[in-house]
Amino acid sequence: MSKPKGGFIDQEGGKEPQHLKHTEGSTSTPKTMTNVAMVRQTLASLGFSLGGFAMGTAVGWSATALKDLSSPSSPIPARDGEVALIGALICLGAVMQGPMTGYLMVRFGRRIAMLLNCLPLIGGWAIIILAYNVWMLFVGRFVTGYAMGSFAMIAPVYIGEIASPEIRGALGTCFHALFVFGIFVMFILGAIMSWMSLAIFSLCAGLVLTFVLYLLQDSPTSYMMQNRPDLAQEAMKWFLNSDEIEEEIRAVKTSVEEIKSNSLGSQFRQLNICSSGDPTIRKPLLLSVFLLSSQQWSGINAVITFTVTIFQSAGATVNPNTATIIIGGVQFVATVLSYFTVNRIGRRVTLMVTLTIMAVSLICFGIFFYLHQHHPSASVNLGWLPLLSMAMFIISFSFGPGPLAWLLLGELLSPKIMGMAGPMAAMTNWSVGFIVTLCFPFVVKLLGDYGAYWMFSAFCLVTLVVVMRYLPETRNKTLQEIQISFTKS
Image 1 (spheres, rainbow, N blue to C red):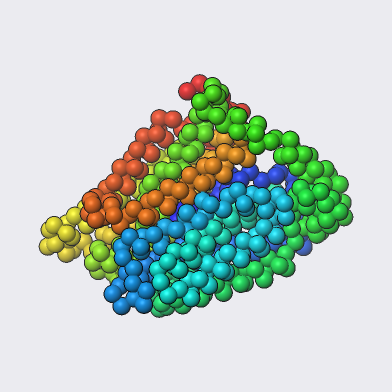
Image 2 (image 1 turned 90 degrees about the vertical axis):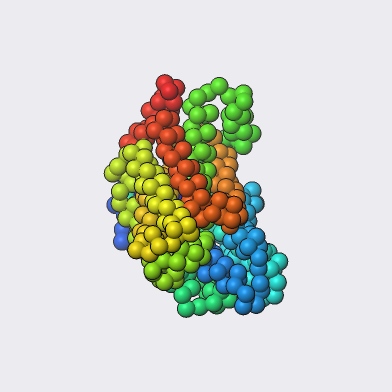
């Protein structure tokens, strides 16, 4: 999964994901940061980033579990359509959580909102563990996905609010890095453990997250939004390890006042594409939603969800479980490395190169399946091709559409509409992820394995054309410069 982030949920070399714009100024200070402050902010960020690991276990669970559940010996036999739904329902759950999570974040603060959403995480895994029919698995996956989506909303905002500018970039990478690491861990454990044991492991990860969150401090911005300035000052002193916080508190107050004055009604009026003739709103919004949708139309969710099944179907020379572990490791390493390159190369060039490699990789993947199914003798010496093709696809996604679709959301959209447009774009991403994952087995039956991958390749090529034609370069440009480029195009 992309987002996020998965993932599903990707970040700009450490900046928070831009589908929820965090309040700036929470700890922005020109003063030298002490080692104690760095340790406190790092530990708090890692604590919330454990939500990313919990997300990764939910996504990675599918690769092994769906293979086991579809086997004749499964204690809970599931047909192809049911198996696909089990894999896809976490995306649907993630779509549904948006409004409630937003309310909880404002009403009770980031920390309490995160703690409350640990309940559906633990409850969802408990339902899966106790399941005796496929409907219980459906419910468990949906509820787990609900929690997963909420973590993707809350944690990056919290990290952006408590991290000082000097280390905000590094700490911002933690959530997505732990998300991908969670997938990798599940791929490894899936080679030696049953889907039930993996669910128990994931439930334990949820319990650890809950305990850690209980020990943490909420952000100063969060307290200020709840009209609790005394607690905001205490939190600021703790995170900065300093009693001189007047400037920082003023910045937080100003930021919170701006948020409260920019009502959702005002944002909705500006989002009305039919009545808005402002190209700085309409064009960036359409382009952002398209990029986040095309991220999923590339097939990334299907590839991650059905990794083991894909390698089994390919009959590759590498053991399917071993190949899955390799893919998980490649994704993790590529994700970490991408944070060192995302700010050094232009967004537009990076997208064009990676989308091209993704399309070629999927074409090669499809060619292997075509030969394997129609000319078996010709594919005998190509057993290495599926693993290489998928590895190149994953690497390219991790450097390109994975992080950049979310990054560009924040760079293209005006702050005036980010509060509503960001979550809307994120929900679009989750929704398309649900559709792609659910329909993948049926597309394979209809078009064959090779047809499915060639279809995903075509989507990558369409995205490439749109990027070449409509996407301006945003690297090292101000928001005003980016918006001017849309008025000229």
